[in-house]
Structure formats: structure tokens, C-alpha cells
Image 1 (cartoon, one colour):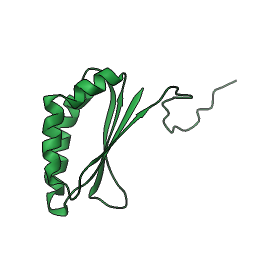
Image 2 (cartoon, rainbow, N blue to C red; image 1 turned 120 degrees about the horizontal axis):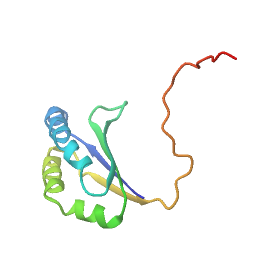
Image 3 (tube, helix red, strand yellow; image 1 turned 90 degrees about the vertical axis):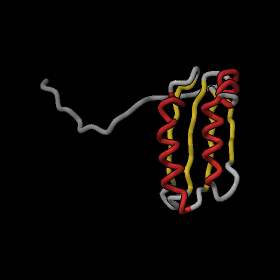
Image 4 (cartoon, rainbow, N blue to C red; image 1 turned 60 degrees about the horizontal axis):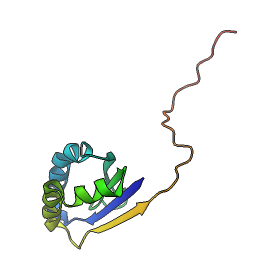
Length: 111
């Protein structure tokens, strides 16, 4: 599994514009070949610090994505940033205890 973290610091006056652009692209990013997950996040401490978190099945599919027209559009939108974006790529060889949970009240069963 390949994890990608793209960190961005947007100019305050361009915040809405960049967020709208990323939101318009995120659906297409999620359906890219090999994309397991793609999330768009905002810092709780600074609304102008944004992050895209991606999970890819193979490095080959990630590299294809990074060369794609869609990623070129995303990079173009990053001209609205206050400073250059940071792209981190992590290769994860093993994932333990991966579960999806949801807080639910305990159900009492008769018996």
C-alpha cells in the first residue's frame, strides 16, 4: 500500500476558490485506477492549512496518477498557495487491525 499526503497552505483570500476546485476534482481522483482512498481535510487549528490524503494499491498506479491530466489540473490550482505544497509518499508493507467502526449503543439481547 502506498500512502500519499499532500499538505498545502492556501492564501486566505484564495481559500474558497481552492477548496471549490479540490472538491470538484475529488470524485474523479477517487475513481482513478488503483486509488483505494482519497480524502480532503482541513486543519482544525488553521483553516488555510489543507491536506489531501490518498491511498494507492501500487506505486505504478500512483505514478500514472501523478502524470495524469487530473493531477496537472490539481497542481495548477495549487498556484493559489501561500507557499509550495509538500508531497509525502509512504510505502506501507503491512497493515494490522484495519477495521471500520461506528459508535453505536450496545444492544441488549434477550437471553
